[in-house]
Length: 73
Image (tube, rainbow, N blue to C red; front, side, top):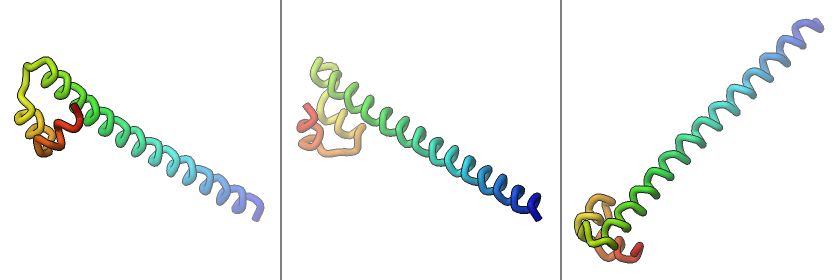
């Protein structure tokens, strides 16, 4: 009986560890995606400021209107 209780506790701890690992992995993935999106915006803004790219092309790449993009400038 004691060993069954101990086994259940160990299984619960393993399940908890797995859930935490999955949550951490999802958080890292989301963080990477958000970082890449922010980096793309910053890069396009810099190219437009340097007059190497038009606001129209940059806004199109980001899937927003020109006026929305120009607010980022």
